[in-house]
Length: 271
Image (cartoon, rainbow, N blue to C red; front, side):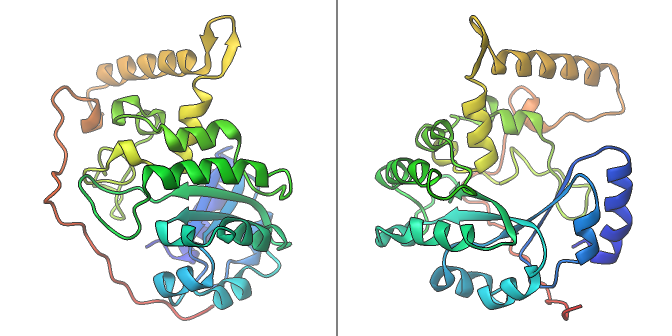
């Protein structure tokens, strides 16, 4: 875990370099007010459902605590939809309406729960659930301007990338664990994710955007693939760099029997 005092040193330095940075937090402690003045910095708060679902899962980062700790700040909200949330037809709009009304919120981002291979859990969405979300959310953005859910991105939830090799986000990112040394493969989820049921908001957005036409048959994906090819060639010339395992022929990742790591940490006192 990177503490606030360390981020106070790192974030301004990244901004001075022209780097755009996002800090994702549960808002279990207050977001420093001075962060709002740092250029090219966004703060995203994970709020997974309405209090009935979020609070038991995220405690002590409950709604009451979040609202207190984001007061007077400017944030984005990130929401992971799980199957229990779809038991009430109005749930999706209730969530969007609540956070759209909050003055602290600039944008609302949505992901779907992304399971591991062969996972059977209450959170995993069915194909019908994913289609329901894809039908329901895009029209809501016309009434709730802060919701970021274009039609193309919603359709990518229904037909996500088939594998890490088909996922632009996996290709364009290198992920590390909290020790900043250990690679997380094959994507940010680690383990053996079921790509056929991926609900990552960034992966879905890029999967949609890559099909956008620029001129004639030229698509965004063509330009991205060209850039990746150049980057891969340069990486091979720099022998000190170790390319991600997922870019290597015959790469093998954790099988479905590999246990997931659970991290327990003390919640720091409020500052």
